[in-house]
Length: 237
Image (cartoon, rainbow, N blue to C red; front, side, top):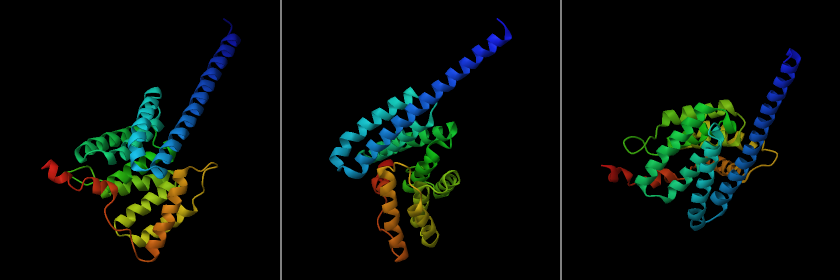
């Protein structure tokens, strides 16, 4: 085969590979967007009875997606996210195991592509680190939480989720004055062309938290994950 023919063939092969990769990436983005939308509807708009039915279905979809795209970080991030929200309906000890599995998925996603979904794995993992109890009950660690959340901000400094959850962490640590600027950034964060329900709800949450912070108040009580494991320490002794 002549050199020119080889080059033409090679060019065609490269084009087909690139086209296939682009089509695959486009398909993945579309499926991820649908999964995100379905999860947001369940999480923000449905009551607990419906959530108990819908979360396992969403989790199965996320697991299938992760199996279909084993080299993509995005399905693993959403699989972990849905596992975490579903853990609220599990017993304390079962939920501990679930959150450990979610943590492992997020760490794997970070290893594969730390920038996936604008650093969402860092946001979710960082949030878990400050919401769940620490040793010996679970892996909660405020130092690691701040490290993860700051990393998410370095990847997506203007993101509504990165700013909101770092602000929420600061409020949890009674660092209200520091939290205010991040709440303001979350409120002012540019939304996507087609903003998700989660984006809009986070912006509303940031507005509410900012009002409370400026009035010198914080929402009292434990977080859902801290409450979830309120008696786990006794069960593990």
